[in-house]
Amino acid sequence: MIWEGDVPPGFEVLVAPVTGYVAKRSVQLGQRIQ
Image: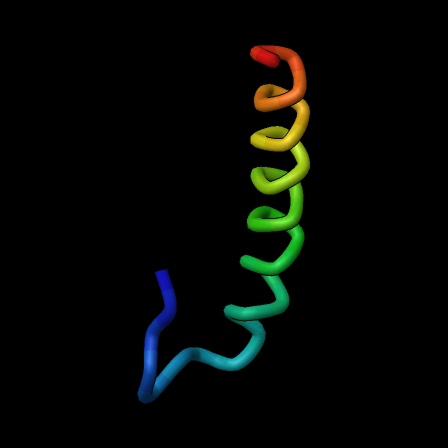
């Protein structure tokens, strides 16, 4: 989910940690399934 255009200031700063957390969780779940 990437927006191009007018993004509120600080929005990316709030979203970055969340996306990073989700990425780590997805990797852990992937390893757990395998």
